[in-house]
Image (cartoon, rainbow, N blue to C red; front, side, top):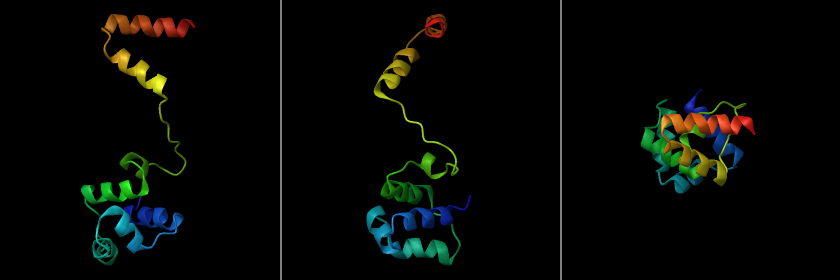
Length: 101
């Protein structure tokens, strides 16, 4: 994956200029432009600001085109949080119970 190409793709899909991306990310336009002029990769903190501007996570940024984004419902999150507090034997019993449904 080419990080700079991905930024351009995301920016163009929103019909943003480099200037608009700079405004929304809190980075300077000269910083963003220099990545392309010098063929440099953004730092992780800068990439995080870019992702925040696009309202995506770093994980979503690096996802392949055909990968789906899966988010948990509130009930799924509650179930996982409760499961993490179980002892290993209790956890196995929970799994067996769920599989029996």
